[in-house]
Length: 138
Image 1 (cartoon, rainbow, N blue to C red):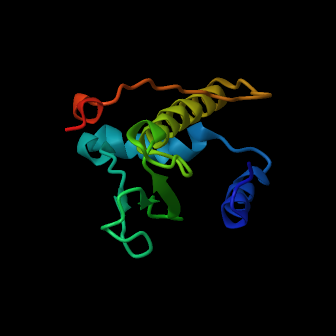
Image 2: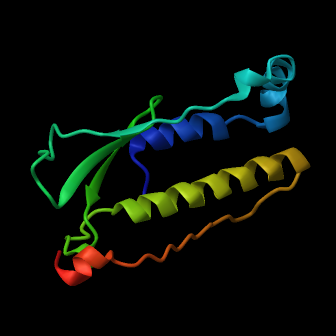
């Protein structure tokens, strides 16, 4: 799997620098948050839109994640609910959110501790059960 070229160029614009120090980057934030703890609240956003996947279409949707460089994510109902599973289902997106949260935390802590990572892959698996209403046909 490869990244969208515009996303890859954005990431490479940071990796092309000689030394990226999280401590140096965070120093102004740490000073700000020390004096104003309420400034540390983070608000993340995602939304669904029905411009391309009509609202009355029951098997697919369209989510938009992020504000800086928004990412469009086609959504599919899971096969366990008689969907197509041809795009990520909401559970897979939740697993991706958890995996990426842990991934970025590991990367930042390693950088703060001076640990050079040679490889990093985080895998998250979620298990869920169909609802009784689907099982009973109600």
